[in-house]
Amino acid sequence: MSGLSTPGRVLAIGAHPDDIEFGAGGTLARWAQSGSHIVMAVMTDGSKGTWKPEQSSTELVALRRVEQEAAASALGAAEVVFVGHIDGELEYGMAVRSEVAKLIRTHAPDVVLSHDPWAKYEIHPDHRATGWAAVDGALAARDHLFFPEHGLAHHRPDSLLLWRAAEPDHWEDIEGTLASKLAALMCHESQHHTTMGNAGDGEAQRREFERWVTAKAAEQGDAAGLNAAEAFKRIHL
Image (cartoon, rainbow, N blue to C red; front, side, top):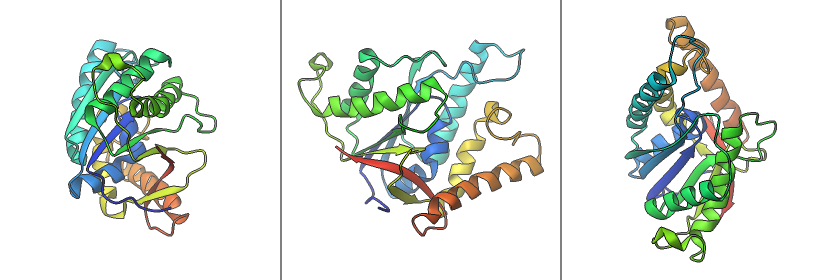
């Protein structure tokens, strides 16, 4: 299946700053250009995401918030919510499920996007925990007897889209917004060495990172006959 109609409201939930951009940045940019109201929720503070021994967690948290806000602006998102769990220590349970259900009820999205918790060999515990929270939180948000202490109306999104899907069955065309995805990713300067192949070290490194992202988009698009796409598992709620 390829392409949703432009949703009115969207909530993307990532484990760390930059996860949403990698998983769905092109899709969010295209929807934002078409008028969607997009909220990006980041579950952890990104405090472990550096290979620099001299950098403190406190400095890194502040830096990554600034980077995330800049990346959201590059995509055209309306708001970033920083949930604030400690990086690498997010443990899935009822409290986290409640947090995500409350986010969904508060922002009332038509579409929720997040990590696929069934992704094969996903080694990062925060990614797995966030994915389970998104799936289970979306179900809880739709039914009024879950978490009545929220004091909010229940809300049923139309769809849940999971990136890095174990079994993708839905594709969004990002040929026209691949540049916006790349611009948003490059805002995460603290991650240029850790996840972006030293993209900030010079023109050659930046171009190599851009080629890698472009190649991944082409690979995902090939299954749907698109030049560039982001692939998801779509769950109807």
